[in-house]
Length: 251
Image (tube, rainbow, N blue to C red; front, top):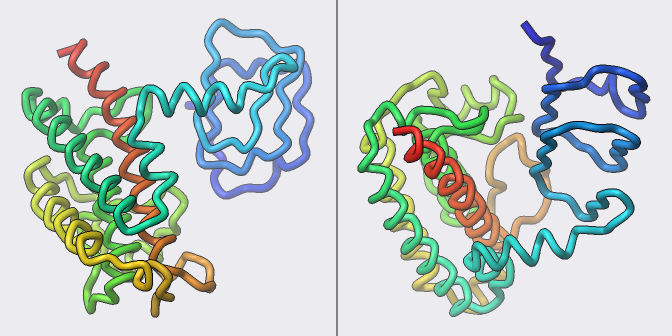
């Protein structure tokens, strides 16, 4: 079994030389300054949020972002939203995308919806994560609900186990897609209500809470919280469509 290293800083500043790294996976890590030099391989994949990406001395950052925006224009709406109308337009586009994608997903056997593609979250896990994201950034931070977190929510990968337990999340649960979609679609409707009533002053309101305890103690403004939800929805829809194509091909 391959070795696994979690929440470790032992590789910070390390130099790996003349080693066989075939199949190496680096996930949810801080990689600023990472260099891969004079290496070779038949299949190399990079995925993440990189401020600058250089491949063989060519800065490909702008190309990658432009191509992603071309393929997934909702990313632009989510990223550039500034006015209340922008937020409403972005959320409307996201609702439309998910409706179509979920309709396609329902054509697959239920087991396929729990299948992970290349180690990524399954479609059901993705819906659980987006439920958690909206619970945290909308239900808790923006609306300050008394009990914002649904037990089926699935947090980001690095959240400590004690923090998930404190929020009442049941990560070990294995719900069906419809069981997850009940609270998920209800929370999407909540987001719709928030953006429908949004004003310029409301966008700049400082929230009384942060999304969840593991998040930094700092000022959270409504526009930032809504922007996080928009970006999460747009990016995870991109991942879901990518993986659904693989599942459909194998069905």
